[in-house]
Amino acid sequence: MAGKRKISGIIIYGLAGLSLISFLLARFLPWKPEELKTMLSAATEMQAAINFIRSYREEKGLPFDLKTDPNQTGLIGLKWSALTTTLGQLEAKRTTTNPDFAGLIVYLLRQAGVERGQAVAIGASSSFPALIIASLAACKALEITPIYIVSLGASQWGANDPRFTWLDIQDCLEKARWLPELPVALSLGGARDKGTGLEPEAKEMLLRKISQKGLKLIHEPDLEKNVAFRLNLYETGARGKRIGAFINIGGGWANMGESEEILRFPPGLNIIDRTAAPFQGVVWEMGRRRIPVIHLLYIKGLAEKYGLPWDPEPLPQPGQSEFYRLARASARHFKLLAITYLLIASLSLLFFPKKMVPSYKKKWCHPTYSLFFHINR
Image 1: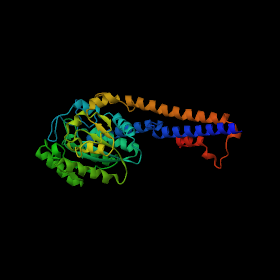
Image 2 (image 1 turned 45 degrees about the vertical axis):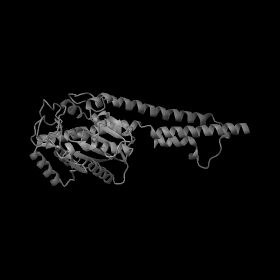
Image 3 (image 1 turned 90 degrees about the vertical axis):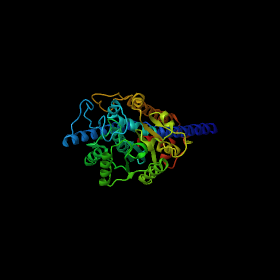
Image 4 (image 1 turned 45 degrees about the horizontal axis):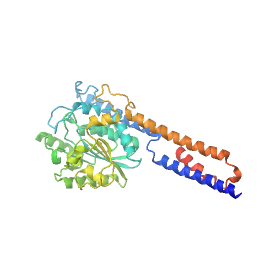
């Protein structure tokens, strides 16, 4: 009898240990089957936003240049304008209009451990309006709060058309009731956030529009003060929610800082060394606070890394990019984990003599049930 009790204890503790291990894997394995739906939902949201923008431009009589924007996204600007701050690559800008970028950002946010109900801070340049929309679409799909700051100056082919700036894109999406949140602040962009490179009339036009909309303007040329001000805006905008990640879009001065180390920063998800000097830029300060950084710059490298097509024409349907394959593989691993656990637990109960099982006041206390309800809730 003592031997049977010993075996009984070993089996019960074994099942309990298996339950615990399976629970932890189920809890922290980032890719569950439903995440694929979230990625596709984000891509579909971005696709809808592009459709709204396309219709809006047509209503306003703003034609598409089919040579520079053959997919008629409305998110490709001009080679030069009064709002142009720096050089830019046309093919890179067109690549970012692929709705799968929204799915990629969901993928990266989940890799960073961001959960529903959290907040995400975004520092964006109008050089990549499509990536701003992709980030907002990802936040909508994940049901997380975006707290974002946009600089309005743009490099070539970004939102640098005076007739259709980021503020106009924002208006379009707000009227379509697509926009999840308004930005917590805007800046002119350029060197030291002073609108360097913008023509005087362009600055006046932007300042007038910002004032009319009642939005906060960041106009602080001191890097340390600028970064501190932005961090305060993010913390206030989070309203007590945890900031799960920071998304950097483009090469904004305040976000990137002035350290040459930023030039070695790879695109995609980064966990930054927390020993970085304070106030080098928002990117570095987020790293010091143990907040993962998603760096959306160097689009060619980003596209190659995650299997997105370069400068596609026409735009592919959502779900075709390589990172979806990686997510599907992870989802299959999750299903395999669940099936394996349930099979082992079921066989143990089936062949385990009932006399060797201690009675439980509540049957749900048995270790077999813990993961079952976690997986199927």
